[in-house]
Length: 243
Length: 298
Image (spheres, rainbow over the protein chains, first blue to last red):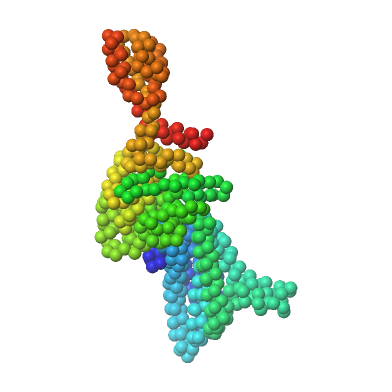
């Protein structure tokens, strides 16, 4: 698994994928947070980096599909998947190695935003007047959010050898799982009956919960089980060759 | 083993054995089931029925063990083209969990003759060199079994010779299975040949036996100085078929496979005639290939 992880990370940073993803993420979040007047922290007048965690999921919606789109589809297209599958590796090791590498890249993209946090701490009046609990919860939530998106991306990539298809379908599914259930829950036929249950299927509900700084085991269990569901589906899709 | 793709039988109830120290060639027209057979042996996918073992291990239940024992070069030689040769081989060595990766890579690189190219990107290499990288990744862990799917298709004649020599040099203490749809490639290096057609084995034998069986018919071409009546030749064997258009050039066919050149010589000399040329056509493996693959198709 480590060998696959290492190979994937090297691939991210020997092609432009790794750098571009990190730069674009920081550029967009930086613009919204500090420059554009509508969303800028400077104009907001509150010492909070909450804006970051509203924008980041939107950026992830297209950034993560772009990172994951060629994890398996390129290997399928080039035939290298056959090479990996006939090496002494289990399919779980292949999936796990690639998944951890993707998570690694996402974490590397998120890490520099700690600078924003530090800046807001310094700008606060009095200095350090910031909801640290909320920020920690939000960071954990954001990493989990990225982790679910990445697992969806891996699954889609394992289903097709066409990278563009993998990108579009992943973006759609991420969007669907993030927003759609909150929207459905407000439809008149569900509202007031099972709206809470429907909302809790979506990612947004749990992400917002955890962003408040309230790290609830129910949310953690939700995130982890979603991740394993999609990784398992990826494993199944790799295993289809044996059917 | 049998493997189905939908309703189509990719391989149909085949059974064979490859021995250590020998090169076994899998030959057959395109779509005969060669690659499918190899994919099963390398644990890429299981057969629908039947059993395959590599070094005594079952391909379904002990796949990890087998995968560490075999070196496999898949068809079309898939490679990570954005990697450097050395980087790629180090990755493969790590996947195999080898210790002392650096020396293993150096050994593999030098045994396939890539020392000069090892710092190049794989995408910058020519096809012949890429093929060597493919073989290098297959032999880096010194496998007991080497499975090469069409290793020399699409190479130029010099490259073919080089890859051929390379495979021959690996033959000692390894079991090598090698596939090709071009017969000459196989004929020149294999000890044993298995001819596949439409998923079935149509011939499976040592090369020498196959060659012997191939030549059941003797064909002799004869050119004489002066004209001679056919009947003197017919005296040698009444079952002979003789065709000639000018009583000087003869084409003699004999179904029994007996070498009749001495008898022809004597017959011609006894008529005070002289032989300008006489050649016996050896029915080669190609004819066997043609005849068995046609027979089973019909």
